[in-house]
Amino acid sequence: MQQQISVVTLGIEDLARSKRFYGEGFGWTPVFENEEIVFYQMNGLVLGTWLRASMEADLQIKLAAGPSAVALAHNVPGQDAVEPLIKRLVETGGRLLRAVDAPPHGGFRGHVADPDGHPWEIAWNPAWPIDAEGHVKFGV
Amino acid sequence: MQQQISVVTLGIEDLARSKRFYGEGFGWTPVFENEEIVFYQMNGLVLGTWLRASMEADLQIKLAAGPSAVALAHNVPGQDAVEPLIKRLVETGGRLLRAVDAPPHGGFRGHVADPDGHPWEIAWNPAWPIDAEGHVKFGV
Image (cartoon, rainbow over all chains, first blue to last red; front, side, top):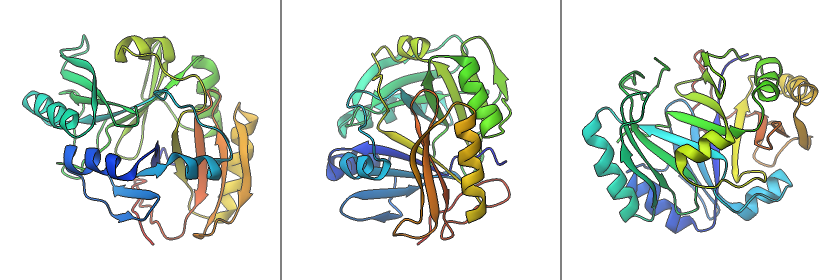
């Protein structure tokens, strides 16, 4: 069985607001978009941002409205890249959750929620290598 | 800017319960574990299952208790692989959310929540190629 996540789909309320954060904040380009969903090709998986109502209809459940108990991380290649990215994410509709610091396990990181409350950690983690295609390997 | 997710972290209540679902259900092997977190090396990113209380302390926010507005998908290489995996996930602590069917966009899929309510789509999507390392590409 492949240890594989094919898609991460985030429920959102407003496509334009979300596109500003992911497009201008992270600087990511959609691979597909229509009036209810935007897909981004990521490092071996696909990120979808989908209107929460459509997602609830598809899953046939009511989804929690508060910050989800799911956190995503985007690792950057150096400590210097952490703060400028967090600043840009806050400028494009994100909300600072936790100011940058050096965590006990090493590296440097801070946390930002996207406009729909989904938490992102922006981290420099020197123990976890990232290759040219963005593939990230666990390390200690 | 790399279009890259480094880590997906799921908040959980019970490590053993979650390990049964991901270990026996999906058949995945941890790359690291301690008394509060289990990491799995995935296809170019890392999956973490972390006690919700520790996660809340780290993020410094209270996380929603209901099904999160985040869905993950695991794609399989053929239609025949969808139902056996869903059956095994339900046997190892998952909850069926939506029975299998053929969605309008093609393929075949069903939905299961993990023991903490995190929704997973198990899908065969012939338009989205998966390579030997599990890297998934958007397609139409």
